[in-house]
Length: 189
Image (cartoon, rainbow, N blue to C red; front, side, top):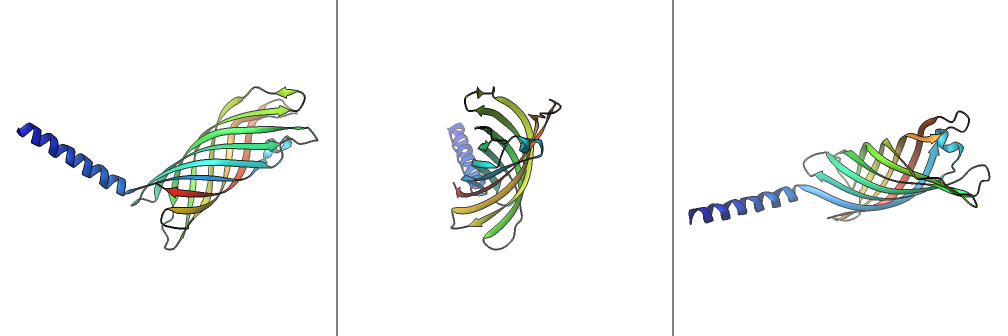
């Protein structure tokens, strides 16, 4: 009987602890979209395109630091009159540092690492093989509270995709750079 009481007591303690931890951690999901601007060597073959993003954020209420996971799809037109497109699908894992200021607007900085899968399609000629590369990103954003459970966000990030583009002149792999500017909504869970 004592063992049953101990097990029940431990179970209640675990549930209370989990409930307290859950109440102290803010979790949210978001959807966004906007423009994606290729820069550096990547801009030699790609035009400004569009971007879509799904985000999941976990941040302890008492801490300014959290974790954000993103999944994204970017599509760029091709330069020099070439009919086709280049697409980038990927995901990033990021640290988020939110600045605790009073009011509805909360600025933050974000940065982390990611996986990027790119492929180019030229109309009439077909597609290149999809190639997966690693990279890093950093940027800043602003969350603006709309209600207790919803917020608007605006964010700009600089992505560096290691060996993500081949230079047309030297045929060497170089770091590809892009800057997506995203507007979206985030909902608390």
